[in-house]
Length: 58
Image (cartoon, rainbow, N blue to C red; front, side, top):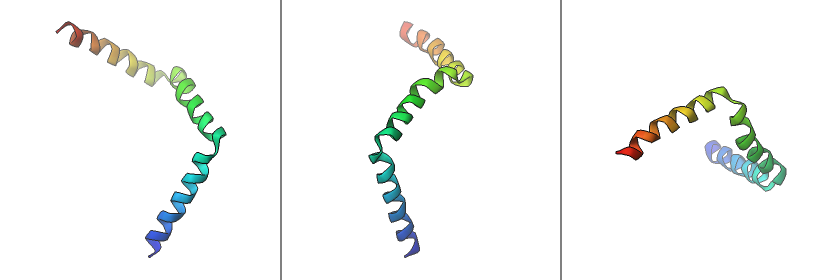
């Protein structure tokens, strides 16, 4: 019974979060802005771009 109640609480929290437009805008900003500052992410992008070239040539 307690598990069901906890799940219900989580759903309510999620609804409140996703009904908040400013929160969604903040997530969007983070997704766009943060990766450009994140060196590991840039390395990953460079790595995946380098790997996509040979697959196009095949």
